[in-house]
Structure formats: structure tokens, C-alpha cells
Length: 83
Image (cartoon, rainbow, N blue to C red; front, side):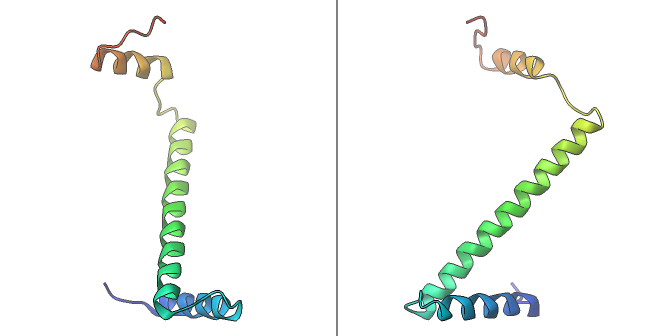
């Protein structure tokens, strides 16, 4: 994987903040903290994108009623929904 200038700039800013706060014991710890934050940011971005796509689908009428979905799942898994 290639490293971009933007990623280096982000890591530099992150490192300056963390080191300035005194919350880092090693370079390895700093990198691990940055990777964890970057992963969380990526997951958040992907989740927001999926939510926005779902909202767009719903607004455009591309959805199925929940009752229909539950009936299909009940058939697939031989479940009784009458309870």
C-alpha cells in the first residue's frame, strides 16, 4: 500500500497532539493509536455512506415492507411468526 502525503500530514498532526498531551510511551504505541483511530474513522465513513444509500433508496420507493421481509425469513428458516 502506498502512503500519501495527506496520510503523512494526518499522522503528523495526530502525533503532535498525542505527544503534546503526554499520552504516548513509544512510537509503536503511537502508531497503534493512529491505526485504531483511522480504522474507526473509516468504519464510520462506510456506515454513514450505507445509511445515506438506504435513505435514498427509501425516498425513491426502493424498499419492501418489513412484514414481507419477516414472512420471507420465516419461510426460509421454517419459523412461526404467529406468536
